[in-house]
Length: 159
Image (cartoon, rainbow, N blue to C red; front, side):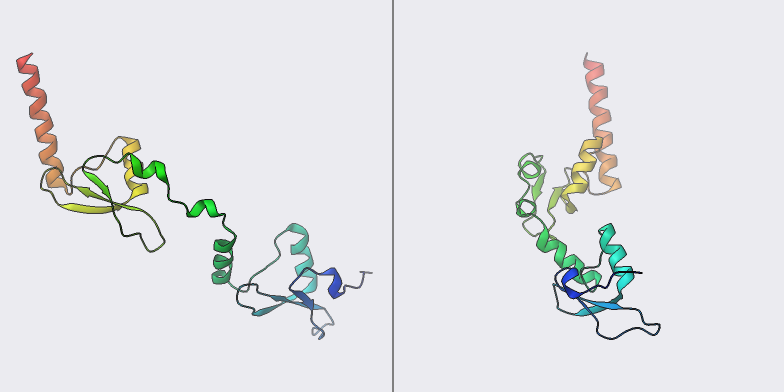
């Protein structure tokens, strides 16, 4: 036979429901620390989740996201210095931060001068792979390749 559970045995924000279920089972109320809304769970299920470390603490995914943001360490909010310092001459940092607070760069096309905006993570990824974005379109990229090919031919003929 199982031991009787009391409110003292449960974590903070969790209390027993005085009403019983259809078959006489016990329930608990879990108060959301973000919005204060209460959710009702079967006691046996809640205790098994609690033993595993998976007990629900919030009422919804939205509240869970807010809670994760509050629990995030302060070091994440500082701007990443190493990503911003070593930008190429045709790339500059965009003052406007993205909707999630992400950094963006503005890449100026070396052929036509048109500017395009991209996430700094995407720029760094291409840079690591050796495909540093310099052109705004396929047409400008073709012009760049043609220039590079002509320069190689001129140096071969001269040498």
